[in-house]
Length: 291
Image (cartoon, rainbow, N blue to C red; front, side, top):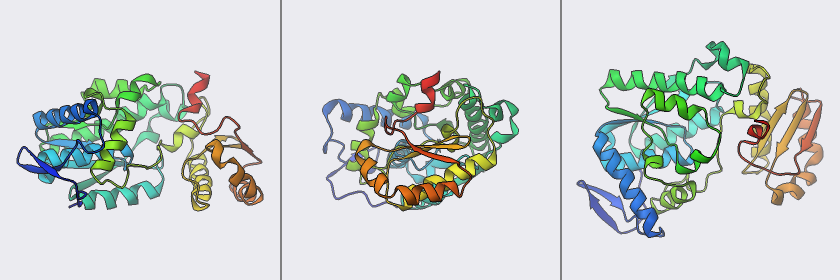
């Protein structure tokens, strides 16, 4: 079981939980309590788990609220996600003492998804969460939950439509928790993901309208691994066919330029002809700017 930090703990439904008042504003504490209430009402839940900030917090909160025996972590494993994410998910689930089921995604079987139009996330989420719903039914769990948060309401997220159609619950979003509040609460719980950079599937690196192929996803994963191994923490390599457009926080620009020759040589090995640094800097969902 994950060791909760040495904060004062309180009783919640018979389980020891961290003092959510530590470092959190009163509104944030109320939101966390509301998320707990939602989970308690659901009784037995499958958590769609990606090892990201939101889903890890939701999983930990569910375990603290319901006990590990009444929670199942389910991860979609496919070429859309770096292998490193799967390894981290296994480690986190083990630390939390919860069972992890790896569901092998079949997103690439849907020609509408592969075509990569503006609804690609809808098709993907429908496939993924349909699989998780089947797992829930087989194992006798009452609900499937996603780690969507309140900030997601302000972005273009067609995947949310699929979640709504399938009846997926979103306790963090329903409670009004923002990303910042989730990070703060994760820190209070002693979760190692509290300061983890934002994540997104590899498909988000491809422009809409260009077909999704295993080869392009693989080279994006390889290119981003180069940046990660160099010590960069927040990054994206957007794949524009022959052009790799690197997004980094502006504070990292000078460090990237110092490693310019190494970065260019490495990425060209993966098939890119040109390697560029986006002067706007890192921003989540930059491919949505064309919509």
